[in-house]
Length: 206
Ligand code: GTP
Ligand code: MG
Image 1 (cartoon, protein in one colour):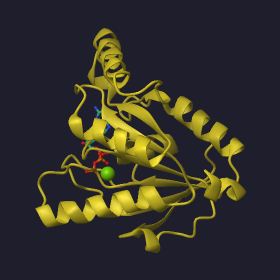
Image 2: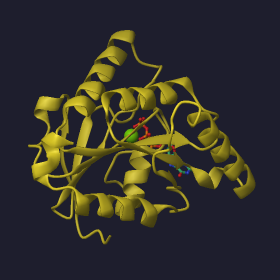
Image 3: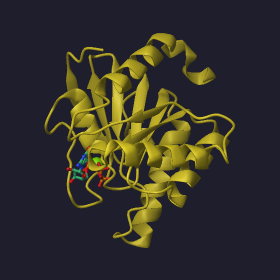
């Protein structure tokens, strides 16, 4: 898919502030610092479209971007960000789960996992929750430039094995590096395919 335009639309603190649900929407979620905002910039070939930071907890709102005047891409705050107050964490949690559960036009949620880490409870639990709620998701292993190819393959094979203890089949799996600009075509091709198969009339029936 060719990216002709990528525009920031707005940041919302809750579902009801989000843009009208009239276009297919793809969200990026995962632990703080996993590389959500960096991946969005890499996909869109823009340096600062989504704000990134070496310090976890940079993204704090639901950020909508409109791509090719045709679909929305959403940068979400990280889950499991420890260095904030308990109350703040609960507010984030509520905002994210409410958005994911109720957003009619949300077609797919990309769950980002740092390829260097062994399966973490918080990610496995989040994916399990998606399964229970019937939320379609895909997995994106990020920062693959940080591992050599044999450890990367080993790490991903182990991760898949762990998932298969919980799931009958695996969702689509992507491997990316914002640093090395890899995995861009694969993710965009997937979004393009999904966009071609889902129209606005289908939203409420998904
Ligand atoms: P929050 O908004 O805090 O939830 O974080 P985020 O998931 O949006 O992460 P962000 O994109 O801000 O990146 C966090 C840090 O990881 C930054 O220092 C990035 O430069 C770094 N980073 C992101 N992607 C990659 C990657 O593919 N390779 C490497 N080496 N570093 C990366
Ligand atoms: Mg971010």
